[in-house]
Length: 164
Image (cartoon, rainbow, N blue to C red):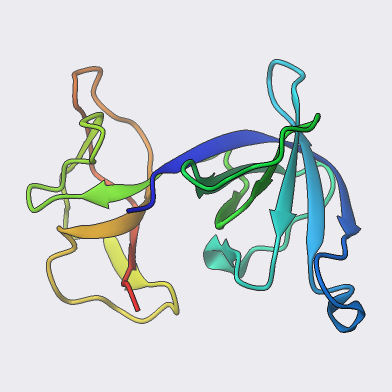
């Protein structure tokens, strides 16, 4: 099971990177971000990286990138992670990517979702999801939350990550 971890920061550079054959040059990007503590992190972005709302990332944008915490990473500086999900413009909204159980509590027990009539629930392709989003990996975009443990929030948008 994937364990999602994240880094947030401001994009310093975006450049092409060659990961495999010459034919794929230009298809993969290396995004360098700087977090609030001035740490530098490199993110490998492939054609399979999911950008929420198909947002375009540019230098100077604030992003949150999610990656598999169990995936092997090279021991280099700056650290380099393969981004699975990127959310652009994270100044305005909070986000969490995790497995949520039937009660809509995250696997780490830190967030519980209270769905309202205004919560948008969709698939990655933008189509509506009419079933219970519990027992799925979810991308959750939300605003204010309680200061309890788990924090409770009414999300703006839930994107259901259906396993293929």
